[in-house]
Image 1 (cartoon, helix red, strand yellow):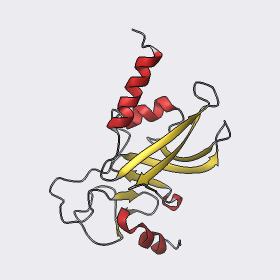
Image 2 (image 1 turned 90 degrees about the vertical axis):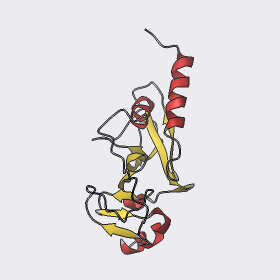
Image 3 (image 1 turned 120 degrees about the vertical axis):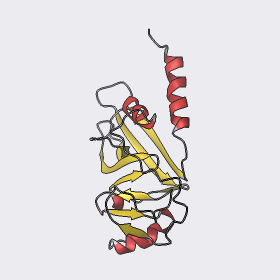
Image 4 (image 1 turned 30 degrees about the vertical axis):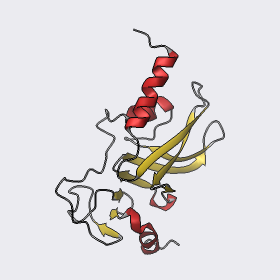
Length: 164
């Protein structure tokens, strides 16, 4: 069965809305060179409207796993935050597939329902699993740093990394 372009567009839009803001997180992207060999994605990963700083590099959030690649794509567009599941998503179809939640390789930082008393710390060092009980439901895991980060205290976490 072939889907018409309009129906496919509606399905993709529904997937994007279904992956909408979770615990303050949102991902928005642009598709450059759609349907061509030079297709690439550039995206913004945001928490409460503010883009996550590139210094974190590779993160696992409540809406999924993302990697920051500051380079030029085939179409000349800047590649920024991109969904990651063993490799970065390179096309809109790959992005939508990951955001739809059907790919088990696309990790998410899901909080336990009983985790109501989150820490006031900027970050908690540790592994992705098991998730610390003190990590709030909107916290993300910074893979390269090995930290659970409180998104409301990103400035303090950046300072601890030696950033601004």
